Image (cartoon, rainbow, N blue to C red; front, side, top):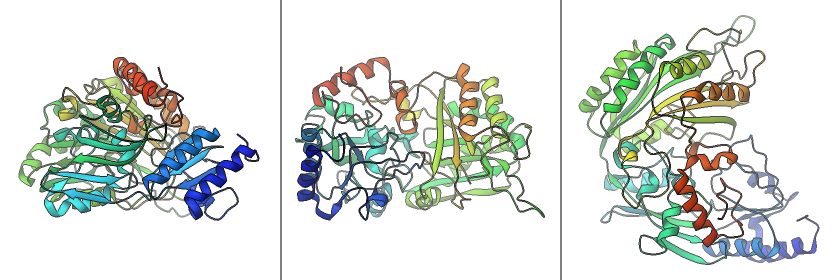
Length: 488
C-alpha cells in the first residue's frame, strides 16, 4: 500500500488515536530513532512506527494492519530482526517491560519488552536464575526462538522452561496459551518464533543457581588445531553443569610507525560451570591443558548475576554483522582444518592477516538440550552435539567488551574487515562451503540470519506440524515478516 492512499490515511488516523505521540511517520521527529534493527545490515523503511505501551495498543495495531492491508512487523529490542519492515507497520514492543518473580513457584513473568538483565536482577535476591542469554537482549524473541545460554546443558532451552504466554492473535484477540490452554499453540510458541501471535508477556521457570565458576582464557592461536582435536573427544563426556566453547577471535592490531599494524588472532577457551569452583576447575582442566600457555583472561567463582554481567558486558551498540551457523554431528579433521585456516589458525596470505572474519566459535551443545520432555516444543536438531558459528563485524570500531555470552557475537573486537580480494560476506560464505561436507544442513532459529532457511531450523515433522498451527492461528500470514512458517 502506498503512503498516499486513502486507506493509509485512515490507518494513520486510527493509530494516532490509540498511540498519540508514540506514532512516528517518515520525516517526523523520532522516526529515524525507532525504525532501525540492531543489525545495521538491515535498513528498514516502514511507513509507520508505533510504540506499544499496553497490550491494548498491540491489539489496536494488529487490527489496523489487518483491516487496512498494512504489512506488519513486530520488534522488541531488534536483535532478532532479519526481515526489513519496508512499507508497512513496525510495531515496537520495547515499552512493554516489567518483571515479577514468584520465589515460591520459582517463576518469573516478563513483559514483551523486558531484557534478560531485568530478569537476572529480579531473580538474584532469591538465589534464582533464568535460562538467559546476553543480558542486553530481549527475553521474548530469544525464548520464542529456542534460547540457548549458560545453563542450557544443565536445564535445557529457554523455550523448554516456558510455562505460559499472553499474546494477541493475528485476528486481534487476546489469548493465554499454556499446557492446558490452547496446547497446540503453546507447543508452537516454544521454538516456532513470532509466527503465531504478538506476545505481550511470558511466564517461565527459574532455577536455583548460587555459585558458578566461569571465565575465558586466551592461548596461542597455533594451539587451535590440537585444542579442537582434544575438544571433540573430551566434550561429549563433560558434565551437564559445564557449558564450553572454543573460539578463534581476531584481536585489535597495534599502531605501527607508519600505519596500523594488522590484527592478530588468538585462541580462546570459554567455560561456565554451574557449581562450585573446585569441581569447575577439575572439569575444565583437560581442555585448558590442550590449549597451552595462558596469554590472558582467567576463571573464577562468582554469582550467576555477576557472571552474566561480566560475560555479557554493556549493551553493544548497533553494528553491521554477517553470521552463519552450521551444525555438525562430529568434528572430523576436515572440519577442524576448515575452521583453523579460515580464522587464521593456519598460515594465510595477505597483509591484513587472513580473511575478513571476526571470529569463529566451535560450541558443544547436548546435555539437557538433547533430552527433551515428551511435550517439548519444536526446537529442532536437539541431538546434534557441535556447532560452528562464523561472524564478521563490518564497520564497527574496536570493542572493549569482555568475553562474549553464548548468544552474543563471539568476538573480542571488530578488526580490519577484509583481506585483499575478499569481503566479510565472502569470507563467511567461504567457510560455510568448506564445512558443508561435514554439516547436517540444519540450523538453529536464534542464530539463523537467512530467512530463506527457516525450514532448516526444524525437523520435517515439526515443520509440518508448525504449518498446521499457523493455518489455525494466522491463515492469512499477517505475521509473516519473521523467520516465516507459511500456513499449511
